[in-house]
Length: 98
Image (cartoon, rainbow, N blue to C red; front, side):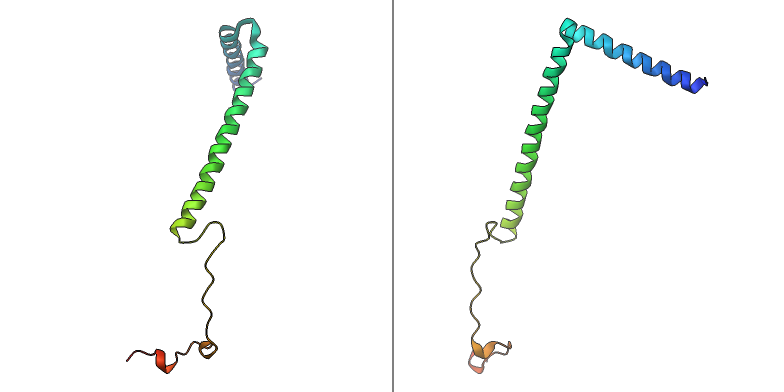
């Protein structure tokens, strides 16, 4: 066994021992029940964080569309109809500025 393997094994065993001691001090004999409660709390916190992120994305989309002048709900004012004489983009003589 090399020295590095021994060092990593020693560090891992110390980490396991510290985790077990911490769990024993914090939770006592009800260690399994407490870890389930902690997991449920973490799941609930994850759901809350996901909901906040989704709400932020929806809000950002709404504001960016509002600032850009677009209606976020898709109801826009239709473009005015172009008279048949101006279909090619040339102005009529009456519309020109003198």
